[in-house]
Image 1: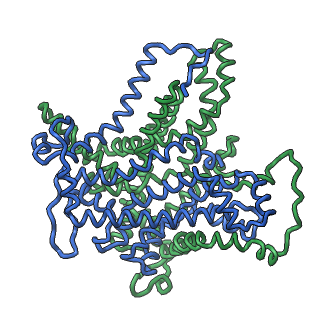
Image 2: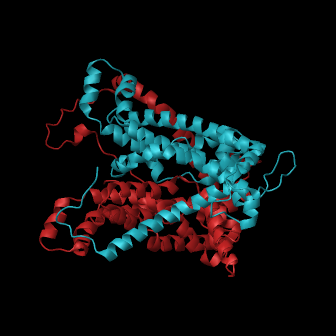
Image 3: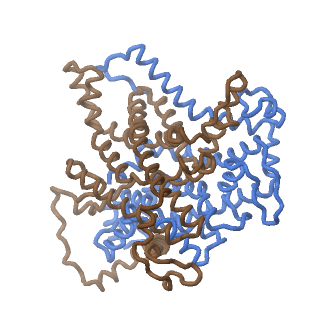
Length: 295
Length: 327
């Protein structure tokens, strides 16, 4: 699908072309170069990193997975990776299921209690409970040191619910009517008609939720005193951003990790996004979110 | 990105189509019998929304209490009226957090806000579908990285032990450390925000650009309008509603500059430059244990923020724009 320039449009000037080309290259490099050098450093041996005196820019010293081996031998990192994967998986399933059900219910104006339910969701865009009341509440209901504390407070995003609802409401009414005439109940309509038609928007919402759980460290920082329950994002913050050894329950402290290991942790934190992203990003270009944003 | 809409069902919306005769509203008991599956579907969402949003919101009363977490609790603590708020306005650190927040908002309005628009114009102008698609994939990507990652990446690039210093030192120059310099902090956080979010922010402008009728361009070109005149007279007016909408949203959100980005870098640059509203709430409330004082700061921010959003929206309506929600 090669697009061509319309007949009426003048040919671009050489200067303009050059400027555009340069900006594209610069923008792409600004984003990709840091990722490249971090990836390369994580794949370099300790000697290479020492000789270069920091991040490795030039390949040619060979690739080794020793930093990754070292990282996975560290029980703290390994455990936090498992925690992150589990929390992300469980949290995303809860969030997506709850949001689809809720959004479907909200896509039916005139039903019992519709207005008040919609209102209590839409108001979340402008009124926030605030950090401290939520902190005290989550602690008070006994979720400290419980994995639920890093799932439930962020399980429903009003934005995602509104995105789903807007899409559900754009489905032609006739489909619902005919299904109902055929005797299908609400759950059946949702499962057999609405969800298959909404795969793209559900994929996008799933990505948003999954990324939210994977990246979240602050709830864990607030509510999980036991460092053995920490997710990868919080380990990343401690090891890489703070450059501090992880506090151990036993009181023992391990040495701060080397640069290559740090970069390996960064890579592990990035990789899931890099894997899932290509499958979902095409929907952004098709404007799945825009429909909802325009309301 | 808020998108509040109370749009009615497609049936009620259809203008010319014969309006479906509205059934006389059934008795609530009958509607309940008909709609209970919908209520059942909404129930898990409502439990979470009330359980982790609206019920904790009530906890803001402690802003008006001499809150004793252990001996009094929320029901047994003494009310002290607006004492905490009076203390806040006399607190130099609170003033500094407010000044920092507003300066960062103002700075980013000038230096961040136009970037997604420019990016969208650049991407929209690319004739090659392949190239555009590749560029889009690249610029959207950092949006999905956490602030921890972004700060870590910037540290590795611009920090004292980072790549830039490494290169400078190898060439006999003095190393720089932008990660710990309070004077350039506002530049640093703005570049981080651009790196992470400007690409994704271009999506909405790209959609607006794609919605402009291409015939307009053709007609203008036939009439002899060059590319700059077409940009000025067709493209920019075409995306003006979106620009105004986002500008208003940003103004309504002036007190929100983000929390994590500042919290993560606070120890490196010091609170002088990096204290913003949200970090103030955390440090004054949770870190020091003055929950009532921190809650007062948070409540102040929430109320002023709400007023700002409503005012910005009213302003949008006055300008004849749609605003965030319809009237």
